[in-house]
Picture 1 (cartoon, rainbow, N blue to C red):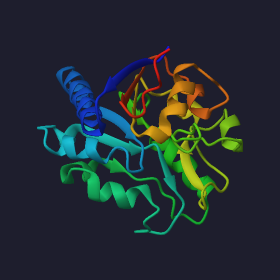
Picture 2 (cartoon, one colour):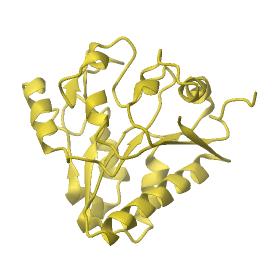
Picture 3 (spheres, rainbow, N blue to C red):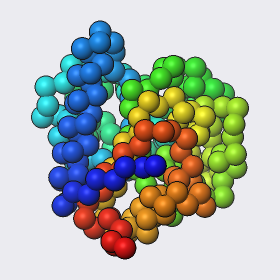
Length: 222
């Protein structure tokens, strides 16, 4: 069952997500380990990244992977990397494993990226689309049925093919933290909480999941 936390606004939700990340990093470091995580793109997590930039995090022992990426040229505004390179705290960038979406053979590139994944992610950050997608696991795409690859490519979605962690790839997560804001996500949040497997997000196969939403995205009580 997904645990739900409702914060009053997007900044408060971002602050809560950043605090959880700090806590997870500190736990890993205290155990003498590197911290491994994967993060989603889009506009939603930008406030969280800004919060992280203000924290005293040991970036030299933090390894970051992308959850998904659009197949587009370098610097294209559609790319998650383009936004993330601006939004991430600068010390983060040396530890990011960017998805190789510029390769002429996306399937081979996806396999190479999968080979770089850690055995376990300490944490995976996910977002949620109004249509119930997460990562680039989008409604009706054959990637939803991939069971033998941790990273795969999708068909066209909103004008772009994507590279994404698959459901098997997401099983590497010890914990999933969702950060979802905005009234346009409210119905999808309700479906996710209800475990409605007609939306891709509800099929994420990780036991420990925390859903952080702002008041606008929170489903109506009752």
